[in-house]
Length: 163
Image 1 (cartoon, rainbow, N blue to C red):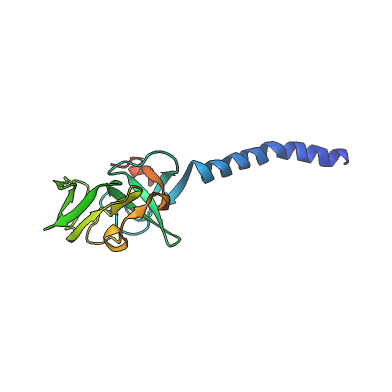
Image 2 (image 1 turned 135 degrees about the vertical axis):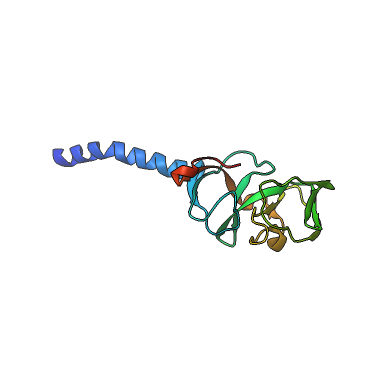
């Protein structure tokens, strides 16, 4: 190999390493994701960009990204594995306990009691009158949840933790 090619390869190595690190981080740890549509208003609005954490534990009230038929939807975890959830007269109950849902908007349509399996989550959009969620699709398996979103990056005036 001539000297010129060796020097070019030597100069490219740091860039290749940086690119590899970025690809690995996006694939296995975190990645940006954009909110699409009004289903999470007033918490999130269409066009906002969040950081999706692909690792870690899923907790009640976390905002998660769910893969449904190769499409990502962003919703809030309301019920955890093994719990029961229902809605009567617009009031959501988890394990027969009324839920205080300060983050939600609109009236939640009633649905019958659902008992979740040991790897299932029940998710709802915060904008209850304009959300396709577990009321329509049923509970989601843990493997369908791509991760949690706890930080808005853009627009900059909304930068910070998701409540």
